Amino acid sequence: MSLKAYKKSWQKAWERITLSNDTKCFVIVSLLQGITLIILQLRMFLRNTSLSDQMDSYIEQNRTLAASCEMGLAENRLTLMFAESFGFILFQIFQFYFCLHAIIHQNMIQIFVILGLDISSSLYGIVQQSEIEIELDIISNDCPGIYKFSPNYELYEYPHIITSSVFALVNLILTVRLFLLFERKMYEKPDIELNKPALYRRMLIFVMMLKLDAFLVVINVSLTIAIIPFLGQQSIMFIIAYVIHASILLLSFLALILAYNSFIRQWKIGLYIFIVYWILFIADFTFLIKDGISAASSGWYFWVSTSEP
Image 1 (cartoon, helix red, strand yellow):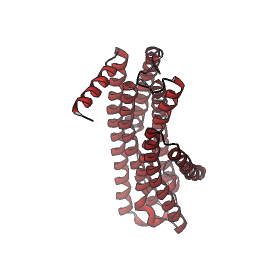
Image 2 (image 1 turned 45 degrees about the horizontal axis):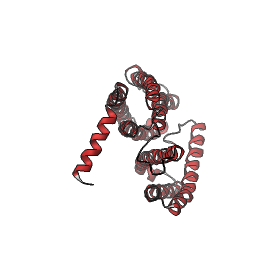
Image 3 (image 1 turned 90 degrees about the vertical axis):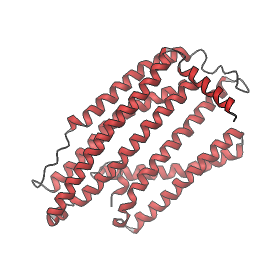
Image 4 (image 1 turned 30 degrees about the horizontal axis):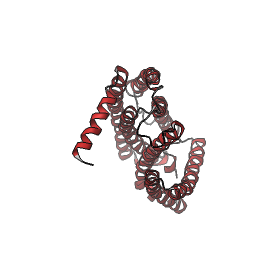
């Protein structure tokens, strides 16, 4: 693409962003949301790091007692929450890009999905608090009276939950206003080859889902990598299952590239191959869900369940 074409593309994008006060507000709110929630998540990350350091100190001073109540295992699980915080920060960066993309392409379907992700983000703050509560309850029950870890929810989780909920409410209002703005011209694009709104709608949904899939794969990779330091504590069967999962995860990158290129080139065979591959990925995801439910029923939580020995 030539410099002139790039300039024209950027000019068109800017025109879409500044189309109305609602589009400008949506982008600004998305940027503020990303920055604010990343800062709050970093504070929670540092708090968890402090808790982990306190556990390290306690283990060093009381090795026998700490080993008898599995303090080290509790610390390992707390460490895996660091990967979750990293994933959430990546999500906020992706979410801002997703918002820009939706406004530039006037993709109302994507804006609805963004609203759903915002609501899920606020609920995830409750999940993070529950994880810490479960972890500290395990320590309190298994090691009664030996040490008191203070998570200070009112300084960390509560501000995160309240702030993300407020942003979700604001985005709900903006979503309604953007729907009223885009409803007449949502699929009336002069550059659509066949000029079929239904076909264009499916194209938008497919590309949007590919982007979401790609992001979720990246998050899955970060969680998978986070488990590597603990593989030495696992059984042979766990390690075999881990290698299989990691291999499937690698294939998912190739499948997403294949799907996108097949879509651009309108190559049906490539899309069929992608569908066949995706059955394998769904099977792997189903296994992880089953493993997560099993871990949750035994007193642990879902998100880092694959680390449970």
